[in-house]
Length: 557
Image 1 (cartoon, rainbow, N blue to C red):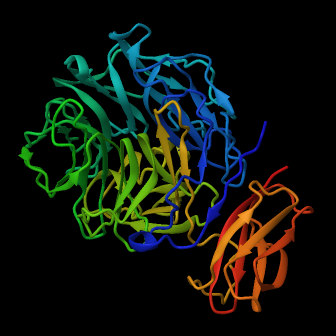
Image 2: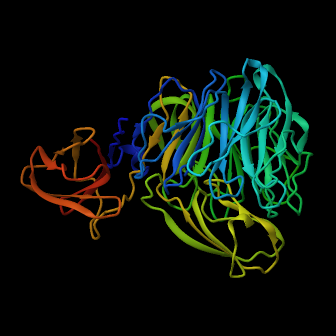
Image 3: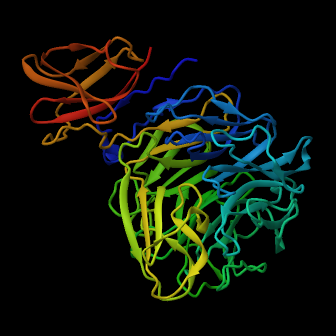
C-alpha cells in the first residue's frame, strides 16, 4: 500500500487569515473511491494509542460501507481505508464511545434509508470493538425507522452510554418520534425505551446540559419543523414531552453543536440552516440561562450561508473563546472568530477548496500538543454530569471522588466531548478530581459526500514539537517551497533571501530529537540528505537569527 504524503507550509496566510493556523487548501485528502462520506468519528479503534478516522459512507445516494483509516502512528493516514465493514447501507452520521465499558471504542451509526432507498425506512446499529478492530457486521440493530443522525449520552442518569436517534425523512414529509435506546450492560432492546410525544423531521441530535441542572438533556435539530429540547429531571431521566421549542419562522436546520462559548457565557446551541427545501440558509444560535423558557428566538444569526451543513464550536486561536467552524454543500470550510458567545459574521478564514461538507471534527492527530490538566470540582447540589473547562477532550486519564479512584465502569463519556457522567450521583461537597488531556492546536477533519473528492484533513501549523528554545517566529524568512513531494532520500529547500544570509536548518522527529543540523548561505535552494532517517513525520525548523519558520514533512519510501 502506498503511504501518504503530507506537506504543510507554516508561513502565515495573507490578510485576514494570518491569525488562523491552517492553509487554505487541505493538507491531505483520502482517495475518493466513489465514497459518499457522511458520518465522521475520531477515536483510537485499534488500540495503538493513536486516534483513527472513522467514516460512514452512503448518505441517501448509494449503499456503502463503514470504513476506518488507521493512524500511521505519527498523525498521518493512508489514502485508502485500513478497515471496512462487511455490510453496506445508506449510512448517515455516527457516534463514538465505549458503549459496553470494556475499554474499547465502539461505533453507533444511523442508517437513513432501507435497502430499497426512499420509501424504505432505515435503522440504527452498533459495531462493537473486538479489541483491535470493529466487528465486520454490527451485532446490534434497532427496529426500522428513518434516521440520519445519532448521539451517545447518559439519558437516564446511570453512568453508561445510551443511544439517541434523530428520526424522520423530511424530503418526503415523513415525520417520526425521537427515540432513545437505554444501555443495559452494553446491550440494547431493538425497540426504543424512550419516545418523544411529538413527531419531528429531525436531521441531527445532540446531548447537552441545557438547563445546567447537572444532567444531560436532548436536543433535536429539525427540517421544516421546529427545533426541540427535552430536559432531564433531577435524577437524569429525560422528559418525553418537550420543554423548549425554537421560535423562528425560517426553520430548516441541518446540524447542531452544543457548548459554552467562553468561561463567563451561558451554554448555547448552534445550528446550520440549509435552504434546499426552504428557510433563510443562516446559522442560528440559541443561548440558555436558567430557567429555560418554553420558547425563544435566536440570540444570533450569521450572514447567508445557503446549503449549510457541518458545524463545530472549537478554540482555534487559543484566546479563551470558542470559534465557529462550518461547512456547506459545494462550499468552503469557513471559520468565524468568537467573542465570548457571539461570532463576527465576517469570516476570519475561508478555505480555497470547496466540497460537499457533511461533518467537521477536530483532534490533535499527531499528539503534538496534548495538554494535561487536573480539575477539582465541588458541587453544591446532587448531580450526575460534570462539564470540563475545555470544549474538546482528547483523553480522560483518571477520576477520583473524595480521593478514591473510580474504576472505568463507574462513569462514561463520549469521544471528544467535554462532559463526564457518573453511575453514582455526586453529592454536595464531594470532591471530584478529573485528570485529562485536552486539545490545543488541533487538526480539522471533514467528511465529504462529493464522490469525486475524498475526506479532508487540515493540519494545524501551530507549535509543532521540536522547536528549539530561544527561537522566535516571524514572517521575514521567506521560503518558496520544499521538494520532492513526498520526500524519499533528500529534500530541497528553496529560499527567497539575499545570497549571503546565514540560514540554519534543523530536523526534529516527533519525540523532539534533533535528527540533523545544517547551515547555508541562502541563494536559491539547499539540498538536505535524509536517506538515513526512518519513515515518518518530522518538523523542519529554519531560522536566520531574526525570524524562524517551521514545516512538517513526511519521509516515505
